[in-house]
Image: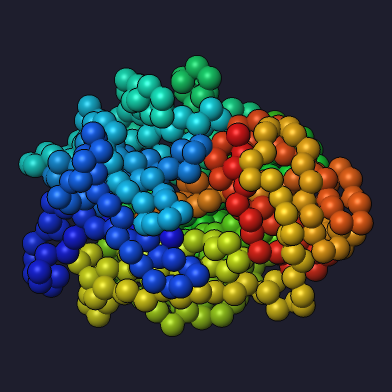
Length: 473
């Protein structure tokens, strides 16, 4: 697991900004030890230090590298483009790959069907000046950054940072800021005229930063009607006019069914706990883990941690309370699916959290979802390392007749309570033999952008195997 952050000053309790440079580490899940990636110049020579990439956006490139766009406000890195390259024999390395024409603090990135990455919004925050970056830009891993294009709705209602985005199977990119949703045609790079307003609710406010909730694209299935029908769900956030640390969070949620004739955000059953700065993680069985956050406050000013995790089941449209965390996870916390089917929670820093949580949380916690307590797990004995779109491929498993479902879950990258990379795509089972399953890969990059996914097989009780990485291309 790659972590990257700002470098704290010698006294983290002093009222000074983070230093100009950052820090990173890779956690080895086998040994639970960390190591430091190398930092290189654009030419490949050793560089003295990593740029301050905190407050950036990120998304995975098709070859497994991570693109990071922007960085900390009023720092040189706010206009940076950097790539992290993993290395199976070591901790990997960082390298700059370009510069943005204007700063992006708190942008959102997403991988498109052809492996390019779109970078949306953020603030051009330079010393003495903070202006909404009302553009989007596309980074091509072959030819580099393309010229920015206008996104005129950025900044409406004061919302310009960390929009929720989701690439839909129809090739449109859903972009949600504040209380409004727009759709970008990724073929023409133009916005549709359609604007969808969030559902009415008491004390309605935007769910994007700094009244941050979270958002997921619910699991996609080839047997839905139509196939891969896309539904997007938003959770929590600030539930009333901001009053700092006393702002009540909301437990409300809503879903946008993009397959409807007239898409509208519709209220759905609320979470069991109100949360601002929650994290949501798609699980192999199609459920959604929600944890972290505070029951009051806004972004960096929340001090009522919600310790209970909870689980949303899209099949039954219901919530279930789960176990309690031991560590408060407030601003700058995170959550991520692991290959073994557990969820890792981590983070919460000293500099940007109020008392009594003005301290760095360097512990990680590992959560075992309910499916790990339902008996034995199926196994994957073998699967291809790479799969082409629409191709059929074989998975060797201990008991193919007992496998009820197969799914690909895209490797995640999360910051500030939103994970634009995560994605759950069910695979059709087309044949079984005594030792193998034959399944069909997703049809194109709009359904599943190219890159690395965890392959899971699940039995009839919803118990998943351990995940195996497969590159889709």
